[in-house]
View 1 (cartoon, rainbow, N blue to C red):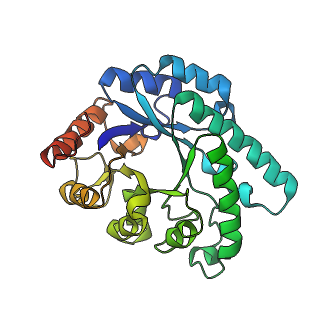
View 2: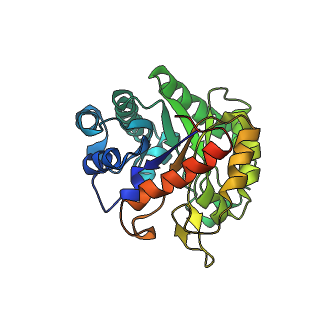
Length: 270
């Protein structure tokens, strides 16, 4: 396993073209690039990032979900075509940055009734995900569905139903989103199993406020043991928000803390 940072952790602090050089200077080895708007999708911006990222390995890309992802499942052909045009650019960005994975949320469960899943049409969802996965796969990128309280995978059971019909679909475990959804993260972990590609990690203090690893009360030792038990060997990417920490050098300290735990359990990828 290896540790890293999502540039989402620097959103509203640094633009991506500033965030990657900063992570490189801090000695962070792995990153996820959070592409924040339409002007950041596609080859021109990706080439700009590739030129300044230094030795940082880009594990995955992540788009601003509501820009287009829900419309990939739209019944209207023009809306769907425009969304796929955005997806084309995002997968091209991943290729240029050398990222094998795309962190995906899918649909947005905006209406209250959609949160329960009572209205989920899994045959239709599977059909849509098969098309998106195949599109990404043809471009050398693996689609990874993240558990997110307000999106497609908002509860335990969704991933299992989709993955059973889509062999190429992988999963992303998000610790804070599991907490928000009120399902224990280990249930998501058990469901994804060997399909887990990487994880988004964060800590939480006694008052429930998100913070960097080693600043709160989350049991990272147990998390690493559980990941080791399923044979996981991917990245643990720190993903917090701009106001959840002080100085940016704390991101490196948090990575070092996680590295120590990985080393202790004999799973640190150097």
